[in-house]
Image: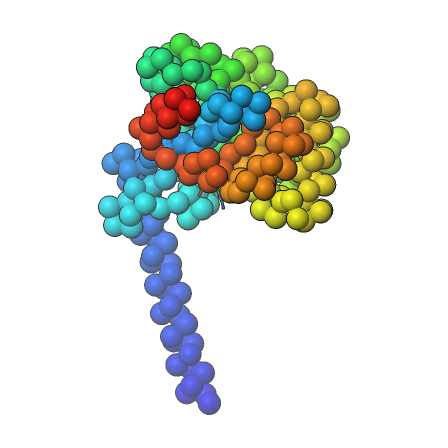
Length: 279
Ligand code: C2E
Ligand code: CA
Ligand code: CA
């Protein structure tokens, strides 16, 4: 039994070393990914319920790794956050998304909002607001076309500095959305103090619509809350017509999900806009 146990232990250790090694390799490769320009932004359209038009997109990062192929953010964002690499990568995201927006505007497409996800480290970066102002100014972009997606926990982490940053963004004219609204631990009262523009309904609440009566109540409560506070509402993860019908029936302002389009490279967005306008 003892021998068995020791073998197990050795096996376990070897396994852990392999995991640690793999992680180290991943970290090294991620460090190089920015220099080697291996990150890509994909864009997922947001459809305005009233007009049926694409009025915005959300930028979603991908890593085109030569060794691993196309890696989704769930697999590398946490590591970027831990290592602090999220700050330069996040800045690349904002800049790339803004350049793309500029390109679409210059090409004559109707103006669309560009939603960009921020991570906690990035949000509390001292010069974030100045950097964003600089990028918008350099590209001569209307600030209201940029919508930063934050989570409740990012804002609640240090309320005072969050309020200050949010006010600066508001003064600049940049929009702020609360991502996955209602999934965090915060109370509704914080909406009184935080100048935000958009509430985003999490995929979790959309998944079982309209059958799940609790999810249906939550989704309609968020949509109503947004409307009553004169905020915009967006539902993510819309995959079928039943979900769409329920959400549009509740007057959700924008819908986003595989039903309309998966996140796609920029060229595909241009194509989609062409076909949708023709429809
Ligand atoms: P998120 O912000 O909640 O983004 C929505 C996720 O749902 C995306 O996953 C999107 O591809 C996926 N999705 C869209 N429509 C549907 C649908 O109809 N059904 C289902 N099942 N899923 C759908 P993705 O692209 O893998 O991103 C995962 C998360 O990674 C994002 O969640 C966001 O938190 C984070 N992320 C993505 N890009 C960035 C970035 O540039 N910066 C930071 N800080 N985080 C990012
Ligand atoms: Ca998001
Ligand atoms: Ca989500």
